[in-house]
Length: 217
Picture (cartoon, rainbow, N blue to C red):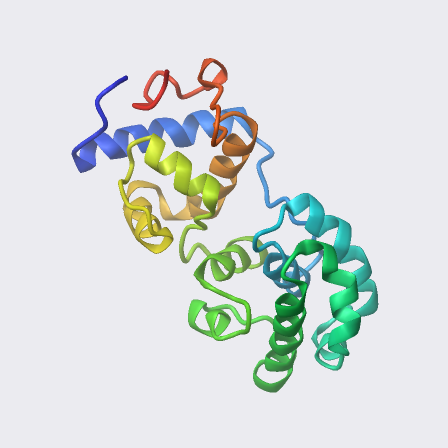
């Protein structure tokens, strides 16, 4: 096992290699939550908490057909929304958050999804990770880096941070990568985490960055 990078310069070198290699490996990397606009992405991302994107994508067509915009969802009955989103887990709290989020959009943002971190995290069911998803993918605004379980795992395996907290990991990664690549970086790490760098049994022999990864076996 290689020595983990210790200096900022070493971490930046690894970050550069990771970014270039994963861009070549996954040229089509993108958000895998199906959506047509910012409102749909916001709903889907709220539903994705503790749930797979595949499952969310099975549920959202019915949700968006019934509630195509914030005005419709704000006036929904909770039990009706619960029935649609039941299979995503924590369906009662998710339904409550969806309706409250839509109500806040109507009350404070003319039914539109806001474009700042502070306004987004004020919405029910929205934390910094969700806000970064919306900004990066709906509006092409690189305000931060989405840190999910895959990004957390890979950034530690690559030796780019020792932090465990998602916000601390985000703060550690931001100076290492070009700002205009922050949204893409999350997709690349997520795709690699799902396809190669598995949590339980990473397939290091198939990894395009194994030569520089301090955790490679």
